Image (cartoon, rainbow over all chains, first blue to last red; front, side):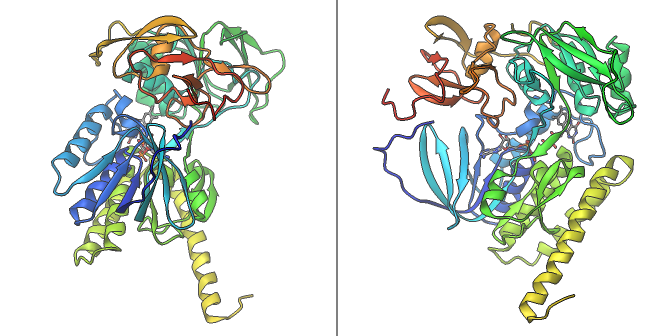
Length: 387
Length: 104
Ligand SMILES: Cc1cc2nc3c(=O)[nH]c(=O)nc-3n(C[C@H](O)[C@H](O)[C@H](O)COP(=O)(O)OP(=O)(O)OC[C@H]3O[C@@H](n4cnc5c(N)ncnc54)[C@H](O)[C@@H]3O)c2cc1C
């Protein structure tokens, strides 16, 4: 990227900047304008909706409002709500937030032009990114994240290749495999390191019925090919996920699709100095935050996958909470406590049951860490030392 | 290659757009990214790693991983996975880390 030096740079102000226009950011922006705040919503893509715009499947889950609706249609509804909403959100698409300065300024890039934005509150809803996996030649063109494969085929109608090896049999690996079939692409196999399939049984049954083998207790050792992927070497693993010698075999594929989990996009939060904590259940490093989605920096809030990888319905409710809390810190409103309590109840319901087990464990770790931190702060303010 | 038939999606492609890749004329559609148009034309290797000169393609397609940096209309390090394709775009494989101070 290069910025044209001759262009004048002026400081733009806004009350609340929302970074990321996925379900979390959309919900946050909507709540904040409802409360009368001036909101700037920024996304680096040409469209709103984040991950939702490529999800052609009907949403699973617990979602009270949106289960059974295709992700692409949920994105349209949310963007529509924003248009017909009570206030005006200034929308900045094709715009990337590059960084955060200590004085609270966000550096924003659009059309090769960099300008500063000075918001009173920031809501970070940047989502998550696919995790990489270590294997030989994992940098060859044709090794793609599952999200990238979805973007290419469901958004732009371009197939990623002719024959795909899917790594990971969680929900994403299963769903994207099925979507590949729908786009007319062959899926050679799904490889899963664990002894069992992680995703929902309905999805697994669907792909198996379509003739895609799922190899559990297997992993990928190597991508082969000169300039692009031409094949993959897979093998069996033991219960500690160590490769078993003599079980290697090569499969001819031109795409290796990684669906081995997502990790929160937290660069901005980290740069701003929000305290981070490693919670594997939530996808990696996440910002410490309270139940109002406020980080350890009082003017910065977080929501959605950036706060911990979960699902879209949860991202939306967290977005609502962040929007209400951020707006509530600028405008007084008597209804806030009630609104927040209703959202928290909704989150509680969404995370109930077996499928929410992992999230609950992760969030419990966060809660405990926040509590310890509060004690430490108190001690500092009273000047007392704790043993 | 493009998706021909799909049970759920109907791709309404925008108007045809001509652009060049390393001097070769290619076509894509309005509304898609440079990376999608290149991929549809069979171009998967978009550049080389600056030190070891290994082939590079995109990985995340959300503008995050910087594996897809190319030279577009003389400007280096453009993330082609999120940059919309424009009529007459001159897309090139860049050398090394690209010249950021070049003036077109
Ligand atoms: C294959 C697949 C299937 C799924 N199926 C389901 C399902 O059935 N049910 C369900 O509930 N969930 C599902 N999910 C999960 C769901 O999509 C995510 O949890 C949800 O989209 C997270 O929302 P978000 O708003 O936090 O982030 P995202 O949707 O990722 O949006 C974040 C946005 O922020 C933008 N952004 C990031 N950084 C910057 C920056 N610096 N500057 C500007 N913009 C930036 C990104 O480009 C993106 O548009 C699925 C996910 C995948 C990958």
